[in-house]
Each structure stands twice: as structure tokens, then as C-alpha cells.
Length: 217
Image (cartoon, one colour):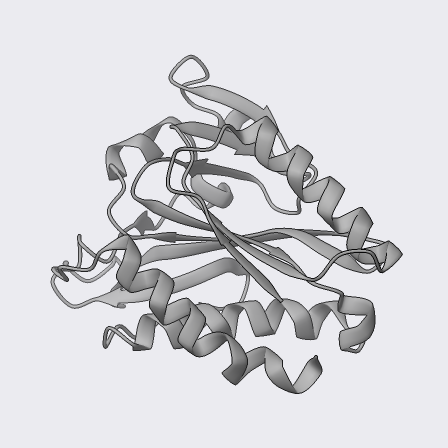
């Protein structure tokens, strides 16, 4: 397993080209699996299920069509994007389980900061309840999204992956309906009042990875 951390902002087309090349090498058995930790300049990506109406401000940032699953999402500085190039063929060939493992990994990393991430049926990503916000019209606690998940598999090798909001400009999400979900907001670790850095998140991801994936490797 190779871990790569990019210290500078990575252009989205550059990231896609790297992932596609590395995934092909992994499938061919000529390269190790890889986790790549990056940040992007502000941009929107449209997954395979993206609806044009959910791009509410198309001139705000660059918009990139992506072959990952999911709808519109935002990437930008202060958000840790985790590109996951793993051989799912050697890890059981169970796509549903693999997605659940990615969710479990995010939740485990968030727990390192005493943040309780949760999954909601019918809502992609990882969510946190907001005790500091008013109850919803139905009387339920308000919930915000803190992490998104969208992957693609080619020859049973995954690419694309996860994004965790550490300290992005949350106003930048305003140009889209994030993941097609308009009735809930977005948050970040810093927005929750936690003085967490990108390095802290990277360490948490590395500490918790084997808890979730080691048994499959």
C-alpha cells in the first residue's frame, strides 16, 4: 500500500489522469494499491447521476464531468479529498461492502475527534446531528453533511473516493445542490468548533485504515 500526500493544490484533470493510470497498473499487477490525499482549487464535479437543475450557479467555479457515482459535489481548499485506488477484486468483489467500508472508515476517522458521524438511508455520505441548530419542521434534529463518497470501479479496481470537510469555505457549496439533497446543510470539523488541521485528519485516516480494511488485504 502506498500513501501519497500532495502539499499543493492539484488540478482535477491531473488527478483523474493519475487515478486512471494507477488503477490500470494495479489491475495489471504492476503497481501497489494507493491512497492519495489531495486538495483541489475550488471546483464542482458532476457524477453520473447529476441533474442539470442542481447546478444553480454554473459560472461560479469550473465544472468537471466525472465518471464517479453520485451527483454534484464541491471540492476546494480546506477539504481533504481521499482518492482510493484499491483492488476490490482481491477484497471480496463486494461493491456494497466496499462502500460500507469507506463509510465506516470516515466514521472511525471522525471519532478520533469525538465527532459522531452517521449514515442515513437514502442519503449518500456521512452526517452529523446539530444540537446547536433549531429542530426541523418535523421535530427532528438538524443534520449536516460532513463527508461525501463517490467511487468508480474499472476491472475491479476502485478510484475516486471520499471528501471530508476540514475547513473549506462552506459558502462555496451554494452554487450546487450538494449530492441532490436540498433539505440539509453542510458542515466541517472547524465549523463544529474543533481546531483540527489537515495533518490531524491525515493521521486519523492512517490510524483507522487498517481497522477497516486490513482483514481484506
